[in-house]
Image 1 (cartoon, helix red, strand yellow):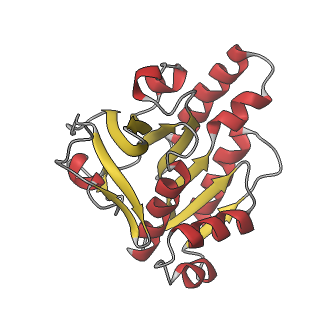
Image 2 (cartoon, rainbow, N blue to C red; image 1 turned 135 degrees about the vertical axis):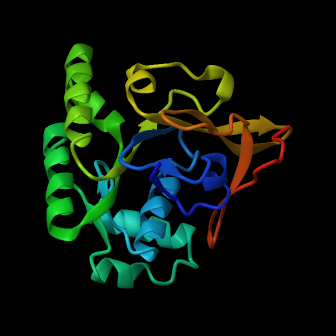
Length: 228
């Protein structure tokens, strides 16, 4: 099986070597869980390894994303060079339109041989639609379009709570190829960031809840360590 290494310390080990190629994974979590950081590092590590990537932001501007990520990861010293070389591209579409996003990804694949994409976030599209059934139909059509593209995609989702016991399952949990849940868990008088791979079609994976840290040189998933 072809796999796409995320390059995130510890995560590929939990995934059995990486995300199965051309799969579409949801990264779900509440505010402050680190979804944007995970998505950006996925694109950044790919660019370092010679795989072009596109980060599609439906809320923040390119300048905002770059400023925040440079502050979060100050040791990613070559970000500007990778952007200049078009190994990393950040796009903020004018419209919250899934079909248009799929066309953008396809265009980037054709023009720049993009192999990784992040969409941040599907929740913005959902909020823009008046009816739930419209979002469900659009999501199904969107995934059908993506499955025809030679690209591995991560889509962020806003969870209603950062707590594990409050997670509710929605349409994305059933139709996406993979789900990685991020949490901000209470531990005494502080919060601990943690993740679990909820599902990943076509491959075995760790089912442990493990802590992770966002460090200046990247995210570190502490495989084998207990949260509590």
